Length: 631
Image 1 (spheres, rainbow, N blue to C red):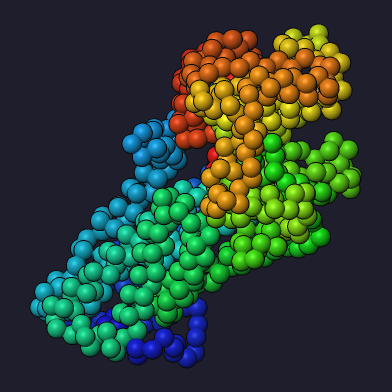
Image 2: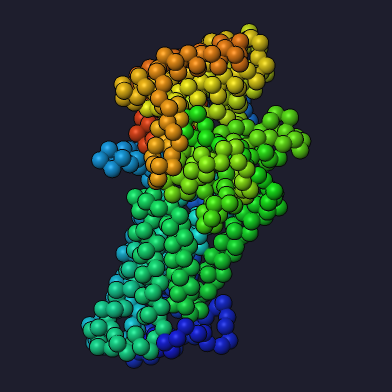
């Protein structure tokens, strides 16, 4: 066991290279009892991969299998059973776990849902039990005395192997296209907490693995010799430094400061970490097998994405780029692709210099044409992008300098999205959005109108829609009203009434902005170079409202049921009121795309309703929350 520490100091491997390291064991101790002690189930170094790495793999795999089985069961469950009172009462606690979260106002941060936190706690208990449960932590020769059981202390050995067991799952959870999403139906962005948490666990395990070796060799006085003669030390240090960067540079504030740099440096650090971690393990026991699996997971995800980009979507897409009346960048792409409400694409713009090397996620703000569902008819894929800084700022400047210009783009997606069956099955839908989430609402409105076309006006369960938009930009109000008016004009529903839908627009801006709204909205004023921003024309509020009414009257004859409010809506009260209004056996869907505070209010209000559903089971309430930063 000591021999493993005396390898040469350069990262080249012994021959022959195999995926199974040598397990030959010869006891060098003087007494049989000492040899038997050394070979104890939790202590035997030559079986440590089987004792610690494999259980780690089994732990993660079991969780994935459980959620896969839940998904399969939900897909094949008869509707008669899933809509029964007993099933609703049983399902409500699990939805409570999926929705309930807590907010830290000082950090403007929401915790993960209770169910996700519970999974995290389960993982923490597993790793704590596997690390601190087996004894001893250190050999009796830790202070340099005899007998010598080796220089690899038990706690260092087991933590190291558990870290190796984590590696494939860190990569698996990071991929946009991955096996976990395929099996469980959980979209990649909702797997990111697990990607981060497994990474944190792996980093802590790496530290627990490292320090006993350093302390031991400092005590016996050969730390310099080990550094110079053994590849395990310096390769481990390089891997640990890269891992520390991956861990700490990925926190939200740093990541949001410059996403392009974060993404580039993250991939570079991940490559360095994986390479030197591989050198560090040096084919010890079955360690190489975990790297093979890791490479397979990464390669499969990357290859699948490239096949979708270049073969499914192709390289011929050309986007028309312009500035919307509220200052959003409007990107329109004619495509034969298919997507559903709430889904997002990763888009690469090929004519923006170095930005052509980056790819960014944006929510689709349209739906495929109905005729295109089962044919090759082209549809218009539309994105509304809020200019902030970096890439989006550059794109907005390009759109301002070259109105209605075209640019070649590559599409990767779609990903995520709202369950369309939920939209169709909900008798009542409440859609809440804030700021740039306005564009995200439009596909849900379109889906609702298409569903309404199939319903008779005499149907007592005829679906209805309530849209709540909160923004401090009057121009976005006007733009959104016109966008909804366009969809109503395009929707052949002769019996559409004000009872079928309502739109509530909440204005949270200043009184000065309300009196003199800016036609191009608030967002273009925040570009990096104000001199290159478009001219912002201020108009009297009455003129803006008159223009809005005129444009609507020219386009539609159907009622536009819009209510204007000042201030923020009390979402908790709104959702509680909607819950009280539900009829027996009905389903209510709540869909949210907004800032963290809005998400927190909505998700916890729906969670409280689940507690009521647990008691009577007479109704159902479904919740979907979209990542606001992508809208």
